[in-house]
Each structure stands twice: as structure tokens, then as C-alpha cells.
Amino acid sequence: MSDELLTRLRHFHSDYFPRHQQRFQDLVAQGQHPKTLFIGCSDSRLVPYLLTGAGPGELFIVRNVGAFVPPYDGSHGLHGTTAAIEFAVLSLEVERIVVCGHSHCGAIRACYEGAPQEAVNLQAWLKLADEAVLPVCACPEALRRTEQRAVVLQLERLMGYPMVRRRVESGQLTLHGWHYVIEDGEIHVFDAQQGGFLAAADAPHAGTGPYRHYVEHDGQVLCD
Ligand SMILES: [Zn+2]
Image 1 (cartoon, rainbow, N blue to C red):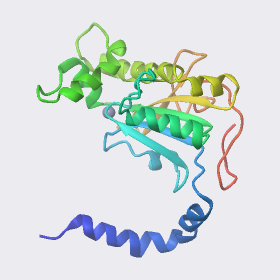
Image 2: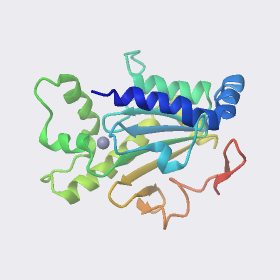
Image 3: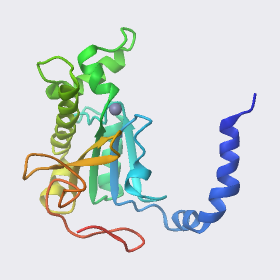
Image 4: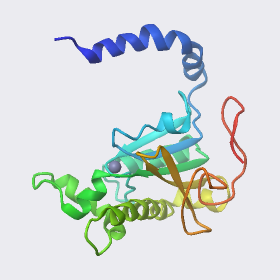
């Protein structure tokens, strides 16, 4: 039986890396300075680099089941997502945080239908979306709305992080809620002014409000 994964590792080294070698070496010499913290669901169909056209060094990514943000409680627990948020904001000084949920999210469905009995950690984790769950059956419309409500809920939780709130209020950091519709290949962005999600094709900006110019490392302006 061939080892497909090993073949792919060799392909990366022999094919992709030589064409992008300089970029990787610059990122080592100069360190990483990503401007975006991307908090996304672990779902394999959500591919942040494809959606944003980003390359190495551009996204600081933390992913978990559901793209959930634990509340900031200062309890010094083993919260990987919390630690990543603190590092991205305080050390990397990112300029934007994206929370990206998606259609057909298994985490959101499990909020209605339950998780395996043995998955005690998963059951506890899913409670982070409790406030987004609607008192109705898990029909497709309810699931879609819950996926979007969960994204907004995480943005609200982010504002409970003192270092996030400080920077948002001083204009150094912007928060963006996205809902990725897999079957349409389109991101819907949360618009705080309109109080809803707009398809990226119709949205005036990539998040919750008017933003400053966002310039990537190569000088490309991604959002104005
Ligand atoms: Zn998901």
C-alpha cells in the first residue's frame, strides 16, 4: 500500500517549496507579522487560505470545533483558543480578528442533536453555543440561523477579553464575523449596522463596520 501522505510531503518539498523558497526564508529572517487572527471551525471543508487568497505568514490561525471563543475569565485554565487570542493580540498585534463559521456545521447540529455519550469534553465545549441555539427543531433554516448567531456570540465574547476591547475601542483592532456557505462558495459577512449577514458580493466591507485601509505585506490593499 502506498503512503499517500508521505508522497504529498515529498511533493511539497520538491515542487511547492522551490517556487516559494524566498518567501519562507524572509519569514524566518524577519519573523512572522500576520495582521489577521483567523478563528475558524475545524471542519475540513473550510479552507482559510483558499477563501482569503492568503499565503504563508498572513494568517495566524486557531481552529476548534464550531469556531467557538471561550469566555475570558482569567482562570488560567488550559484554554488553547484563549491563549492563541492573547498571543495574537498582545504579541503579534494583529489588526483584525475573523471568526468564521460555516454551513452544515456538525458542531451546531450537535448542539441540537447531542454528542456521543463518551465525548464528555465535546459536550462541555458545545455549551459555548448554548445562547445561539433556538427553541425550535433542527430544520435547515434553524441550523443556518444558529450558525450565524453563534458567530455573533463569539464576537461578543471577544469583546470580553480586556486586550481585545481596549484595541477595538481605540481603533487598532477590528472584529469580523463570517459565515461560509460551502455549497455556494461564498462568505457572508456580519454587518453590525444592518444587524445581519450580507453576501460578500453585496457587502460594502469585510466585517462589522467601516474600516481603515488594510494593507498586506506585499502592499496589496485588501479592504477599503
Ligand atoms: Zn463546523
